Length: 434
Picture (tube, rainbow, N blue to C red):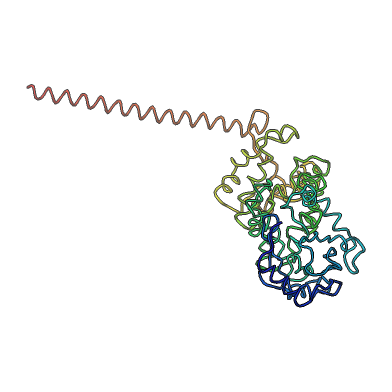
């Protein structure tokens, strides 16, 4: 413990002169502020300069403004001046337990916090772990609906970002992705909150939780893969319902974690609107997004998925047009659906035989039943699409023969020119000799 600063000593001396050595009781907040409202009041504790200044206006405007200091700093109750120099940590749990505060939510934030990744870090003695005051403030605690509160929805990203954008903390504690807060602010959710003032859009706590924040690898976490659809579904209810009935949603619900959840396609902190070119589900990016799984050899073999879906699409007119930036041409989601993807054997599937004319008809209005009879992902072989296979073999041979003929013609022409040049050269020499 270091020695008090000059300001600290002067403030204590002033209080002793003014009050003698009175005892501090509930309701004596004004006496406390006689010293602690001195701008710059601080002292060195464990080698670190700690501010002891309390802004009277901020305190009186806080949600705790009507409380006396000793109702939180209970260890100073009944002490005279100068009081002991070391204050015990304020225990918010004295009040903030379920049922302890009239009008407070009927849940147990302290118990939830204790079980969180932050609470466990505090129990381990990690000095960097955030405590109540780091998020809610200390003497300036305000209600969550107060726009000046650090936990007001529009301020949540900045509050979380105080730690999660700190490169030193990220390195020391191996916190993944210190750039995630910045990416969130640039996402469709972050822009809706920060630039458009749409407070209903998702903020950090909507996905990760409030007091009960758990690591993503924890099976109970709201951002553990099996729970991601439910987490996103709190806002996107209709899409959540469609996804739950899809082949991907059913597989994930059965415990198959290779099945894609919302974030596998849309991203996590970088989510953009589908109409934005930077989005992973923008029409020209859909193929690459789907291919992350559908071109994975391990996944194909493990789940018996059809192979060569990407190569056969790329070889098609649709694939070529999509590659060169045509956003209107059919991509994976155009035919298979986006959130409601079903196997082709499902009568509700967009690619079920009975539904193909309607699916193709979205782009080709006059598509009939015959229009959709052929193969979609054409994979010519002696067993499949034999007509296309033999036509391809014929044209491959024909083109090879045609190219060989042209090369032969050119070679013969060059040979004839060479012989003609030699003959003329001989004739010229003969004329000179005569």
